[in-house]
Length: 103
Image (cartoon, rainbow, N blue to C red):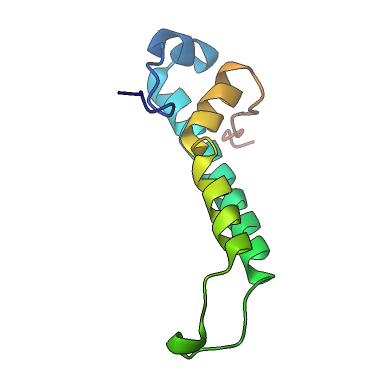
């Protein structure tokens, strides 16, 4: 039985080391994952929209091989959370703090 590649054991100490707090790191990662997911969804919708027809009749809608291949490609891509974790650990994610002090 093959292991799902999106199921990877992560070293929480390594994740926590970046910010000094595991929960803060997870918060940054989750925000980045939402950005990645949104971007991927937009790209997929744009590519599928190229094949969209104005037909609303269910009987006239047919399977389009290109649409199926595009959808399968996006299904095989790594999940947004996995990409975000890798970016975070590799230092490719910017995170900062707002200055909340009043003058």
